[in-house]
Amino acid sequence: MMNPMQQERELRKQEAAEIAERIGAPCSDDAGIEAYRQVIRAARQPVADQLPADFAEQVARLVNADEEVGFLDRWLPMIAAGIMLIAGVFSSAGMLGGALVEATAAMSKLGLEQVPWSMLLPAGLALGLAAASEKVIAARWR
Amino acid sequence: MIDDLALVAAVQKSERGAFERLVRAHQGLVWHVLIRLVQHAEDARDLSQETFLRVHQRLSQYRGDSPLAGWIGRIAYHIGVRHLQRKRIPLESELGEDGEQDVLAGIAGEVDVEGAHADQQVMDLLGRGMQRLSPMQRMLLTLYHLEELGIAEIAGITGQPEGTIKNSLFRARHRLRQMLEPKLEVA
Image (cartoon, chains in turn purple, cyan):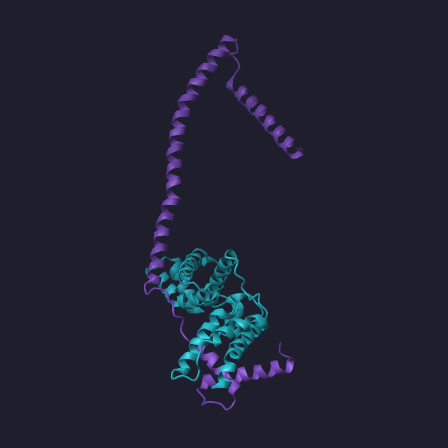
């Protein structure tokens, strides 16, 4: 371990070596400064291994391929959802029609054919809303 | 900085060749950060690629308030550090100064500095010595002396205080110099 004075001395030598290297000064008489100059020269040596010459091109190609896949990723689910929605509307319209016919027949059997839809619909909505509110309140207090 | 913003805007508009230009402009820095941290060419190549893919994903987060090089260097540094953590390789040396000196002295013993190719041998010796330094010290020496980045720029990349960077650089150079010392005295 260096004491503070040694540390300060070494730091000055490192700074002197850095300046000498930058300006291309001739060799110094101080062996310490010369050793640091060699250390700096070694640190400036290019790294032996390098990236391939076409690295930038390769990465750009990868990004472009990703963007194309990303475009399909974004739009394919939306198109599929649209098709499913249209199919769902058509099939549920058929089912709803059948259910209405059955409901009307059941009501006429019970003698309720005189009750207007305009009264049944709000009553059904109110019951549904009450059931939903009960669930929300129960979930909050759980 | 204006050039950086123009280049980023061009990439975001998917202008032809813009991203390739961005990679070419910064691949040297990314390579030096990663090869010095991980010291394994194949891993460093994969991590360089990962860095630029992440740069592309996050480019909208670049605000232009600092140079693009530093922003990209920071991403490379974090990817490199995460790789070292996964491999359980410490970023800073766990050996004390004496322990590291023993490792370096072992290399120094193999070199004949009085021979005909003394200069080249000393360079080789120091090159091997650098490889034995901690990943952080190797990277700092390369960023400072080879990439010629300032202390503030390096601090921006690593997120460490400038004083810590200066101290690490000082210790790295001193260790390498100590490795040379006995050989130069004999010569």
